[in-house]
Length: 618
Image (tube, rainbow, N blue to C red; front, side, top):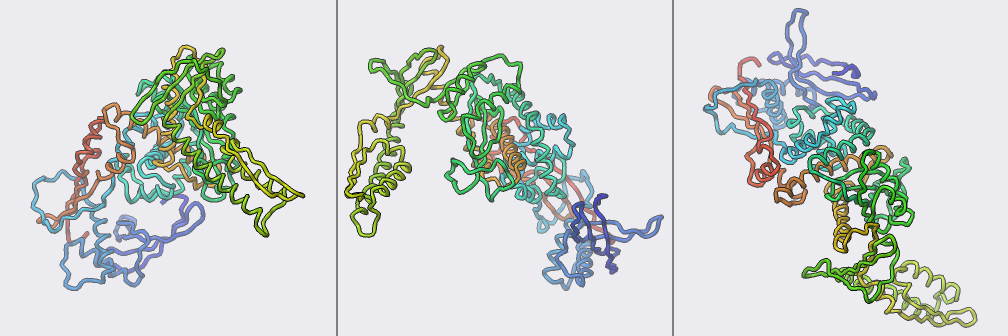
């Protein structure tokens, strides 16, 4: 009971073997009151009779008149009494639950003789908690040195434990803070791995530590960048940058960054939040930043680059930044030249000489990519053409043509029907709206509308197939200021952007970055930051496994490791004493393979043994 809680105790004075139940009304620091129940006993002390707490019962789902019967039944179980007339099913279930909790709480730690005669019918397994995936998360959270970093930031021991719960919970069982709260108390053995107790964890403490973590974002990201460089020998010669967005559930009216924009998930009905992420060539995050949902992509690059340089101002190397066409404006490319090289998808197309020889830079059974390397002043332009991309674009072209021409045909027929719009200016407006909706294909159509006395009488169109085929040919241009790279090297560095796309997919699907349920700006930013921290741990685990030849997805690892559990075995000896042995389940072959590859013990926690002595007076 803390000083912030005012306690009013009402005693219900019925006594059975010196034990009774009392109701306690508590007031929290927020002013809310609630009632809970406790199993206590009266004891004589030098200061008189006092009540000693034996067991917290929570909110007892039983009317007050039945409490004496419940106490008598609990006492009978604790004393090993045989009953001839059982209580009601409701009381029997509660009595068995509370009696076993009492036994486990008051059992004594002991190294009893491993050879015991026990009643096999009394063997029960309970308090099962998952521990496999959690042990991986805890090990790499510590290996990345995050607890030491948080301690240097001024976090207390309890705050660090809750921070580990937030990050590892996001890694192992992603969901909201409320979802995490129930997972920590009823499903996971994470608290045993951390040698702490989450059974009395408050939901409010999760939110408070979330805010504290986010307030130290810059220091934590800087630490992780340095630590990962050391652990995995990263050189940061290649830097990948891109943006993605996630959507809100709710209006998020209190969040200035929540804006309508172009959603990657086609959720135009929801306000958005944009995440900018910088990763290196091996997929390790370097820095992140949250922008408004309608943030223009080109404007974010220089902010992120400056943020990255502030983390390591002494670094005089000139890495190569890889960006997509949406960010690669002329202004951005010119600004990068001072401290960085660049490889970018061109926003414009160049003329390619027919006499320039092309080379094959990749060929598989389903695809062939050819390239031509052209020197354009101080830049190298790489013309790339992919057969697979060409097939995809032509399929899109065919679908867009069909839809656009269906709309035009419907419009052409409607001007001949009674009651439909026929005015020349209105028909032109409808055609304009169609062109706006299908602008990627409408540019290749020549549309003519004949009119007579202000009335449209005919609509005709021609499709410029030759121009369209040149556009939808699977070609794209790469630009770079690195004149020392060959065509193969330029293309190989560019396709590293797929690592960033994989990171975004993992953040959104495996770690549930989307949707955002928080309505406040700081909380939604912190939600994204914790998800990025979880990705640091996830990517470290997968990188170590890949080094050992294991390339499972994180979802596969997480789901299969969940079958490794921590369980309490309860049994009765011939002396009627109750033994409690809490231990990890026997690891399966998959568990052992993962533990061995990560140099971790396949028994994350040592067994615990307790004995409860049955006596006539508990």
